Length: 424
Image 1 (cartoon, rainbow, N blue to C red):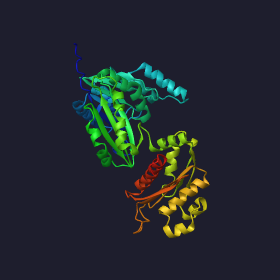
Image 2 (tube, rainbow, N blue to C red):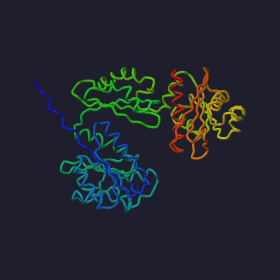
Image 3 (tube, rainbow, N blue to C red):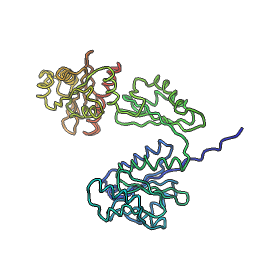
Image 4 (cartoon, rainbow, N blue to C red):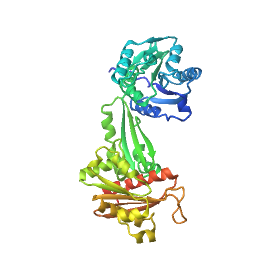
């Protein structure tokens, strides 16, 4: 029987970002994270990420080093029209060519400025200059084209540093060309979202399931504050229906971790909660103190949330807890603002005042001040009220004010999920 030749190993990739603003911390590099995620989806591994200043000699040195480590070098930044944008000039010299005018790009740039009724300066015209011999990658949403070079077995791709321009070029031009150029093996990802269990505890629960995975399947734990994303990656083994075989493993995973799984797709906890509320015809309200509206912000960040979200009361001071949420003065006097008794009253008051099926409430000592021996900074209370009653929780979590607030919002949403699914 004829045999199929083994597929060559996929090339390693290096990402290089250019710009002093990145090194000074004036701009956060989100481009590398996006590229890494998109490359992983097609089976390419990022070996290294480098940031380089706007100096020609340092860019050249970085290019020399990158080609020793990787067969694909993806470069962002330095393609603007100003004098500090050196990338294409350096690349032209690096590959022994000169800058030439690319006619299709010039037409595109001219039309770009005409469309927005802006004068086109000579410096803008120079955006259409590219190193001779490169493959020009069309930038549909900007004026600086991408550039594809191949030199001694290494592919170099230069893209604008503006994130939305880079993302469009990656999707339309770079990723399809990489798939074709390197005949990359099929790869599939299945994502399972969990909440309410730490990474190590979750790993212990599903250890036997993970140990039994086929050799071409790999499980990654991607923890965030109060949640863990499980990413199952399958690489081609020559057998049919790779994705179907991966999905067939999920029932056994649910048997072990079902109470903590809120979605079997890449989504957020608030989006999954919204789907549940819509499916059951329920509405939601929030009463917030220490979170200052963050819970409502997360809920309303989901498209279509107007179909189930009634509103929110941010009652930071005790007089508003009493007047807007009907929290008894006696409860505040005896138990304090940060107490399970108070968040119970807040949730029940919000549910009644805002006419919601379900309401949540938060109160806590976010810090850095305000703590007491009995209720130190990081003391968090939250509650969920519905037609069946009210559940409350008090926990301690102190990682600084910002994280305390974020964790409180995550915790009350996790409790809401548990309540809606009958686990609390």
